[in-house]
Structures are given as C-alpha cells and as structure tokens.
Image (cartoon, rainbow, N blue to C red):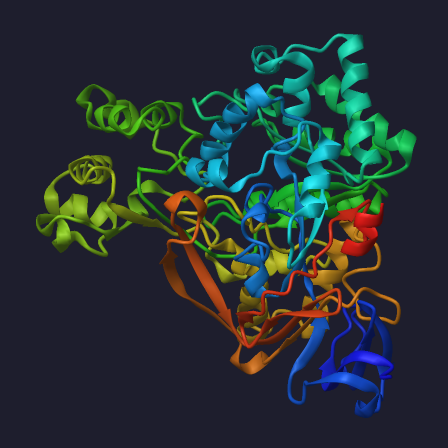
Length: 575
C-alpha cells in the first residue's frame, strides 16, 4: 500500500513563511501534508509533476459575501478559479441567520441592493433549511464545497432578531435586557463555530454611506449604538476568542480610528479594518491610514488593515447599479421599481440636484466614466467616449449625457467606471506596508459589475511579475499565511508537515487573468460578469484536486471551518 495518496514532485516550493524557495516534493496523506523534501514517487498512488512550476499555499480571501452563492456554486467562483482555497463569509454584518421564516423575503431583498445579489438566484438557490445561526452552519456543512468556508457572525440579523426590524433601523440604544440577549446570541453562534463578528458602520450622517438597504435606508449596523459594539467586543474578551471585521466611515477620520482602537483594546482580539484604499486625487488619505496602522502596531493595538489591491473597475447599467448611494439625491433616484427609477432619472426637476451632488466614492469623478455599451444605433458613435468628452461634443452636461442615454435605452446602457486607485506608485505605497492584507474581493457580491475575485492572480502577475514590487516569497505570505493567521484559520496558509494540504501549483510565467465575460449560470436564469484565470495547473483543497489545468474537477473537498478548524465530511456526519 502506498504511503501517500499523492505526491507533488519536483516543484519550486514557496511555503508561505517568507523563507527562500527550494526545489522539492510534497507528500499528501489523509488531506494533510505528510512529508516535504525528497520522496520516492513509487510511494504515491498519484504523482503530480510540478517541474518548472511554483508550488505554494492556497490563497485565503477574508472579504467575501458567498453566504448565498455557496449553496449553488461549490467553487465560490470567481474565487475558486483564482487559487483561493479558503474564504470568510458573514462580512460587513450582512448575512442570513438568525432569520425568522417570515423575514426571509426581506433579508434577501436587502442583499439585492447592499451587495447586488440577484433576488431570483437567492430565492431559487438557497435551501432556507435553518432559522438560527447554528442551524445555518449545519446547512453550510451539508452543502457540497470545493473550498473551505470560515464563518463570521454578522450583526445585522442579530439586531433585527432582538430589536425587531423597525427598531433595529432607528439606532437607539438597546435596553440592558436586549444587550444581554444580543450577547447570548453571539455566544451561541460562536459556540457553534463562528469565528468572531462583523459590522458595516457607514454612518448615515457621514459622507460615504454607499451601501444601503433595498429601500435606500441605512443598514441596521450603520445606525447601531456604539455601546452595542462595546458589549459585543466584551464577549470576545470574555471568551478570549474570535476576531472582528468592521467598515467604519463617519466623516471624522480621527474619531473612526479611535473607535477601531477602542474595539481592539476592549476585546483584546484582532480588528480587521476595511479598507486601505488609494485615491488618485487624494494620496494623503491612504498615507494617513498607513501611518496610523503603523502606530497601532508600535503601541501593541491589534488593528490590521485590509488593502484594496485590485484595479478591477465597474461595468454597470442603471438596472442594477447601487454604488452611487453616498449621494442622497442619487440614492433617491436609483431606488424603486424599474419604471420608478426610469421616471426619476428622466425627471428634469431632479437633474440639478444630481449635477450638484455627483458621487465619486466608489468610482472616481463621474465625468470620467466611459460609455461602453450603447444599445441604439444613434448612440453608437459615443462608444468609448467619456461622459465629459461626449458632453463637450453634444453641448450637454455629463450627467445629462449619461441619464438621457440610460433612460432612452431602458436603463440597459453599459458604462465603465475605472477605480479611483489607478496610480501604480500609490499601489506600491500600500503594498510596501508588510502587514496590509491583500484583496477585498467582495466575492459573491456585485455580481453584474465587479470581478475583484481575480485579485490573487492579479497580484502575482502585476505586483510581482510586471512591477517587481515584492518577491514571490513575500507575495505568498501576504496572500496566504498572513490572512490565515489574522482571521483564525488554524494551521492553514503555509506548507509544512501536518498542515492541511491546501495547495496551488501554477505556471508563473504564463499566469494570467482572462478577459471579462458574461455568463448565464446563476439560478433563476440570472447572469453575471466573470473573469477566469489561466496558468493554475492544479489546485488542491484538503489534499484533493479541485482544479486541473484551470478547469473544475467537480471534487468537493472543502470544509466548514468551525472555530477555524476543519472537519472531514465523515467526521461532521458522525458528530
């Protein structure tokens, strides 16, 4: 009988620890790395030839919204195509448990705007065989998975469960009894395997409340009382367990930073802070954040920044677009049914307010948006024009150009907004901080206009190969070991004896992000925008081959990582 189920032979191993690369073999047994070094291929049931290829830990994606998609897409694509072997769900305080049966419809409606997940897909693709958070985790455990899933506990459903929907939207301080119940529910969720809690706090009085509920109102966590955060942080301190993820934008940077620090100090646990982003027109923003994060480390305060390191832009139509919500006039004009939105966007009485309050948080200056998909022949001459250029030629304001065309074409005109972080030198400043996490893929969200799940491949191609900002050794530590350690993945993110065998084997010189595509592969007949990868010869999850030559094998060897620790399906069933 062979000693190993498979051996990865003669690859260039980059183990994720930042040690220098070396040539060697990896032997895999029972889903774990059993040996590293020189291994006789005769000792293996299967030999994977990695000659000329890089062998590295699978990538760990800390910021996704696959809470719905995991039930119909075991690979959690795009992530699974780009070497990601483990993801975190339950980010930003958004999720589907606990949810009472009569609130399921409203819970899904919320996600159609705040994370732009199609309603038809959720209604058809989610089993809804749970009410409580522990029951939700049991359902995730039962679902076929080709990647590992680590759960955070989203706070919005807890607030709605305890306070009621309307009261959760009011932002008042919960009673002591309600705080006790919120803490009890968090304890219950973490007892079941939750790895901490998350919340979006884009305060509605601030300048960037860009992710709102279906009706344009703030999310419950946006208006939750600061004392509620403090109570939840104390739960982690008492348990000496768990992590926090928070996106906090109030308009007062110093106040926000103090609150991040307070949460880390109350809990004694790591705080993952979203997001470190460069804005081409205001580089002082990311430089100030980087300096603050360094000061946190120097003072022993456990705040870790997650960097937006992808330059994936937004290709969108006004059928689905929601990322102008930082401007109240635009939020008002883009909520409601399709017909209501068409009427509001065409209304001359609204146009001046829309011009006076042009959004820029998610996309950069509005006049720089490009017309990429005009539908009517008379609009085709404006293809690939910026709104500013088309407006100059037409003698119209850029807002009128955009909205006149969109309304005329039944809100189906496609526009492209480049991200406001295109300056390569500013990206290097973020990358140069060795403790800024890579990513913010938002995997599973914004499915019709964002493909940021490509970020690991993009990092290796752009940051390492093209611009030589960091070494492969550093890149793999940042893509795997660092996020795994920060977010409580036990033993993952590195290649060492005894570690789970989550491994990527790829052709560095020929690795590539493939062109943008539209595919109709979602439940309910819905479509999405994707970008595939080229160059991943093998991806292994818990020792099984899930990707071979960039194609899915159909093997579902992923685990639900309760408390950051995986259990095999057989063990889970026995439990």
